[in-house]
Length: 466
Image 1 (cartoon, one colour):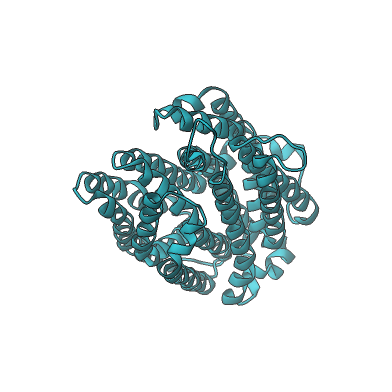
Image 2 (cartoon, rainbow, N blue to C red):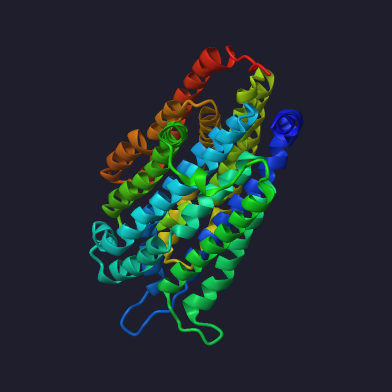
């Protein structure tokens, strides 16, 4: 482990370079993840009308929008637990604690199995009530139940992958996690049209085909990530004894991971709340938001990919007590994420129309989605800073600070603002401003909390005794 500490690129290679080396594969992987999320919507938008029902594709997109908060919640528990595993394992590597590294990895896997069991139960018993709370339209209700039930019952792929992906990232092996992610995305994209429209002799499954393609892709990613972890992560010992849950390890994982889970879950809660609020304006507003959210993921997921490089780099050097490299990690992390968000801002302002046109929606929905894209993009630079700073907070063990920023971004400001704007005469224009306003408020608070962390934590760092 001493050799690992001396040679691990997170502690030796120039921070500006190692962040790109680790971050670019994760960015590519996350962007491809966003790609197959948006491909799902593009294909279901083209589900043909029946004799009894027109605009079937638009109903299908609306159903996916209503199901999406629960899918986000599954990811929240998987990724959030993975964030805790990631930061704690990277820190333990920096401290040369080989036994603890193995326990962190094993406990992470066991926690993933528990998470899956909970969503399996929801998939069997709770989906109908959940979708029914957002719509009374029988067509949308039926589609939403079909799609979400499959995604929950077969959610072990995404939950387990979330842990194994973070195990690879925490040791700097981001290329392997990217290969696994890319493979799952390709599987999803290939099987989407085949299963939705019934090509090559397969039955035409419609929206259920989109769900089956999604879970097949997730399982493919999981299998590859598991293989790479057990074959390539030689610095992490494996064995059944490490799968046994230990209270102190679980506590340390969730000291970091629970705020990340809540942060991700808040996105789910926000989307659910926005669906309800925008539903009082029009069904087209709900569908437009769902489409925009998928487009936005290209930009935000790229930022999340870079954030997932910030966390282990800062955490590793924090464990080593290297104050200079921690500060460099913060600086370059903020710089690179802001570049990503600036490109996204310019791209949406210029190309919103052609991007929205890919979904073949009604004129009303298309116009609302273009409007949403241009307004919400004005807050992207604030959002990018918030994303990067939250990665730093996770690395330094400041989970509560990360949670405060998330609460402001995703609930405390955006939902009351959206509710207020939804009651105005020009609600179709004003509701979209709730998002950039929330990002600005969160950014101001995040800067104050980062200054406090610098004063109380970073300036007091010391290298551990060898």
